[in-house]
Length: 422
Image (tube, rainbow, N blue to C red):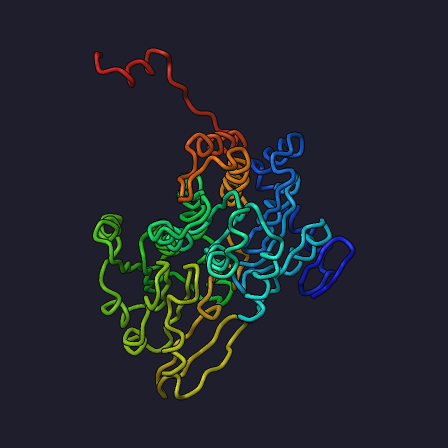
């Protein structure tokens, strides 16, 4: 662990900070909503006196969120929410900005856990989580800290599944705002951000042509919708697999072939998982795939592709073909390929979502943190939706930044919509 007079931190190399500062500044150009919030936060200091923990992907966009929280007076620390998602130059720049970071790209499981424990030692009062790893560890091993936490936020579908299960079990010990479910988050971040960045990661890692390929997308939530749309836009034939009949019907009516994964396995050239579940691609699917099939995961955890089963099948060996690309030889005439160790492909092999879409997601995070501070002690121990007025204000600010104007209702129109007598 590296020590400085200001704070403890654990990063790859502080000398990378100048490059990180440049890249953070570049991302800021595409984050005007967050910039407006930062200006107000600097004046009003809504988070002054609060210790804040953020477990997130340490990217240029997250850096701009962290600097906004710092401008608002928060005493913030950061750790990675994924071992492969950290941008080491960004981590170094944040440390120079006075924000302790515990994250190194490619860190092993033990280091990942140690970093989570390090930020928990900050004794946070507000917790921003991305996948619920911090929330889970706090509730399992640091119960003595729970009474001081006024609330938290959650960035992902996967995290909310876990936190709503905790609420249902009666074990959730502080309120959580479901930032992931904000319209200005999942409509745009999940669909347009994940769609573009997932294909970006696959193309960067492999340099393959998508046109003409059969792409199998597992899951047709907002992330799956975006991935299918982008793959089709690049000329792929798209197959969707689903367990939800309504989503499956929607995929079919959007023009995609829909079938079980067992039927899709021998057909696909590229498989992309985006479900938040485990073993979406399991051993019997792996054995049915064609030679050269490529697999990538865009769900939060590295559990959607059964990597243990794949390793067990690779009797003929495995080798690295390119950075982030590994080949598993499961028969003399059959090789299967995995990108980014089955972890989030858009962050393992690329740079994550474009800054423009994260502008809205992280505006939600900043304003949710402010909401928790303004209502400290008033909220119940449950998962709350993002307040609608905040969601709509972020959309209004984004439209303003994009120089887009919209209509407003006349008083006559407003009366018509709120009356049954017309």
